[in-house]
Image 1 (tube, rainbow, N blue to C red):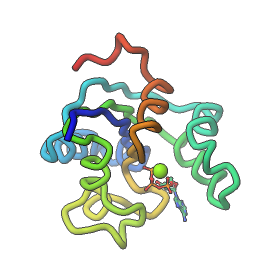
Image 2 (image 1 turned 180 degrees about the vertical axis):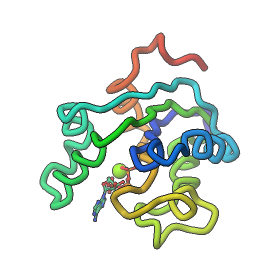
Image 3 (image 1 turned 90 degrees about the vertical axis):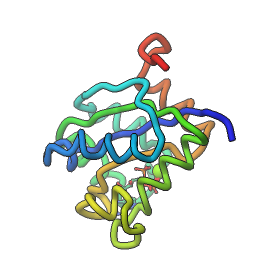
Image 4 (image 1 turned 90 degrees about the horizontal axis):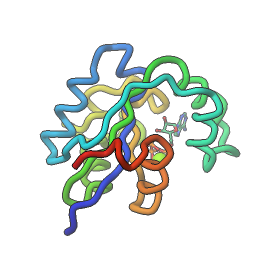
Length: 140
Ligand code: ATP
Ligand code: MG
């Protein structure tokens, strides 16, 4: 397996509860390395663009409202098969269905306020990383 990169977002439910460090530690303990990080308040335009694939879903409007409701921490994570490694430690989208020990099982509040985002493929990781970071902001 190759060393690859993925995009992580620590969502507003986590920054509100001061869990940035705890989430980051769980990512690091899973073997991922933070090679870029910044705390931002997403604009509505950014959130709508980022989640454009979900535009037709019934939860889209609420999701955009939630993602813009407070600060988020966007991070580039690097490691062995980073997309899959990250999604494993994140757990299932719905915390009620997430495995014990995963970030969402241990920390998420609900299926919407589920603490973290992670890219779902290498192709989408590249698109999502470029959405938030210039190449020189990523230091591996
Ligand atoms: P993410 O893309 O955030 O890493 P995911 O890939 O597990 O999560 P997606 O299906 O891509 O899940 O959904 C994106 C986000 O939309 C979810 O993380 C969650 O915040 C929200 N979401 C998904 N399904 C629902 C739902 N049924 N009701 C409310 N919000 C939802
Ligand atoms: Mg997704």
